[in-house]
Amino acid sequence: MENSSVVDALEAAERSFEQAPRNVEEGLDIDDAELIQLRRACRLLAAASCLLDDGYYTVVIESSFVAIERTVQFRLIHDDAISESEVISSHRRLYQRGAEVGLYDDSFADNLAELWNQNRTRTYYRLSIATESQAEAMQSLAQEIHHHLVDGSQVPHECIC
Ligand SMILES: [Zn+2]
Image (tube, rainbow, N blue to C red):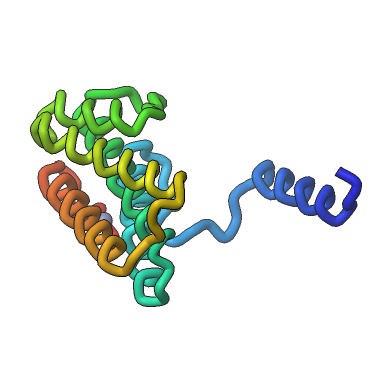
């Protein structure tokens, strides 16, 4: 890379991740692995709500999927179904793991995975652009799943959204 301001910016970004944490995001100043997943989901849902009002539908849809996945990950750790450090990178596999431990049934997991595939495929091939109704539906789905899974845990009071 010949553009030195870009190189400088990359180095500054690298340094920022090496520094001791200061001015951390509200609600995320915690050490517990399951609560980190929970609170990230809470913050994503809160952010999606702001962005929906401003018309950023694509980001709302993406954030809603990530919020759903962080919430499922929270319950998997909470229910001792996976270790704190286990990362399930496949979207379909994560949804399936949720069904395997009884967070919802198999057909719900399949439908979630299908929805994710549909969204990714359509976006990738530019078959559609995000719409307000899709963003609203995804935000509503993410909130419903989040509150259902958080209310069914031992720590519903830890939810901050
Ligand atoms: Zn929450």
